[in-house]
Structures are given as C-alpha cells and as structure tokens.
Length: 254
Ligand code: AMP
Image (cartoon, rainbow, N blue to C red; front, side, top):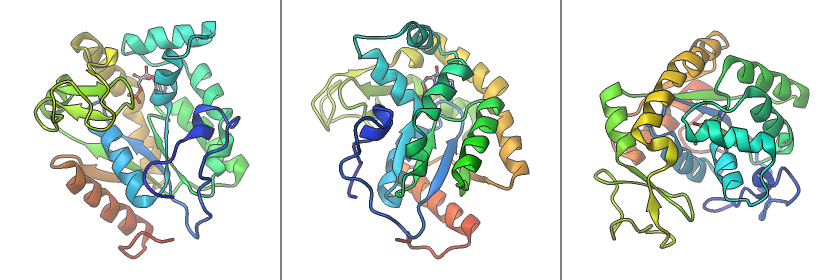
C-alpha cells in the first residue's frame, strides 16, 4: 500500500471496499491520536499513516464528507450544526457511526484513529468494541503544545475545499495564495477554525477530551509527544517514542 489509501471502507461504512485492500502485516499498528485542536493532529495523521503504512480513520472527515452530501439525515443535520459551532457531536451519533465501521478496526493493515474517542464515554465504548473484536490498542499518541502556539496555528490554518489538504498562511503556505498545491482546489478557513468556534473547541477539549489522558495513562497506553517543530521532525519524534513504548526496533516492521 503506497501513499494514502482511499479509505473507501471508512467513508462508505463498508459498502465500498478499499482499493487496494491493505496487505496483511505481521504487526498492524492500532493507534489513537489525542491532543487539543490545533496541535497538528491532522498533519501528523497523514505523515504517520504514510510512514507506518496504516489507515487514517478520522471522524471529523466523515462529518465533513456528509456536509458535501446532498441527502443529509435529521441526525446528521444536528451533528453538522454542532460541528459548525465548534461543539461536539453527540456520543450516540458518533458511536453509531464508528460501530457501523467495525470492519475498519479489524483491518489487517491496522488503523490510526484521529478525532475519536473524544469523551470518556466514547473511550469506554471503543474499549468494548475492540474487546469484542479481540483487538488490542498499541498506543495513544498524545501531542502536546503551549496554548499560545495552538492559537497561532489554528487562526492561520487553511484547508483545501477539494482534497482537504491542510496549509498554513505562514508555516506551510501554498505556492499560489489560496490555491491547493496538490489538487488546485480553493483553500478555505474551516467553519470550526473561525475565532468564535476556536474558543468553544478549546473549552470543549478541556472539559470533555483532556480527561482521556488520565483514562489512557491508567491503562498504560499513553505516549506523550512534544508537538513543537517542523511536521516531519514531530513525526520522527512520535515514531521513536511509539517504538520505544512498544519495545520494537527503530525500523517500521512489515
Ligand atoms: P476534527 O476534524 O477531528 O477536528 O473534527 C471536527 C468536528 O467534528 C469536531 O469539532 C466535532 O464537532 C466533530 N467531531 C469529530 N469527531 C468527533 C467525536 N469523536 N465526538 C464528537 N464530535 C466529533
């Protein structure tokens, strides 16, 4: 599997198979990414998936894809309203979506969950889902950064309206202003990156998601990663810390 797989199974809840289907691995990575909004989880998810050759399972991407879909159910409409305001979508809706995608958790290529779980209830439900599937989580990669730097990162972030690649007005500017380097799409400020939504998201993170650090520290899964520096530097730091945690050699195993 080279580059970034299509994630067809994830987006279609298993109705459309991934192409290519990830080949079996001796040790598929099964990871969760954790960290406040703006810490760079999305960028790290892409880099880590490329290097570790595993699949990027983002719940936020599911909601953004639903937003572009003409036929939105009433439950999805209220989910998108919460998302636009920077609030969390209800646990019921999120858990129903993830349960429908159990096959992705069983995938022989492994997975990297980004944006899920976000509450203790979601984390408990994930534990139950994984136990039913007889799957063990390898680690929870927890990215950490001082608040001032987070605010600077979020307010300058621009996302491609086509392929969803992420840029930054100063730290990672596109070659042509407001145009995506990868697909030529228009770069936009995400609704949930507007200043008023950022404030809500930071508050929600502190209240709902930060307790997951304690939750996963208790189970010995947390790997803390300082998220300052260039994206590739942070990725390398994350992989070294992960391999140290797992007690495996530096190279990515098959
Ligand atoms: P993200 O791309 O992960 O930052 O997600 C964007 C938005 O989607 C969040 O601000 C939430 O409104 C919603 N969302 C994504 N994942 C979850 C989740 N696990 N629980 C609740 N809301 C979520």
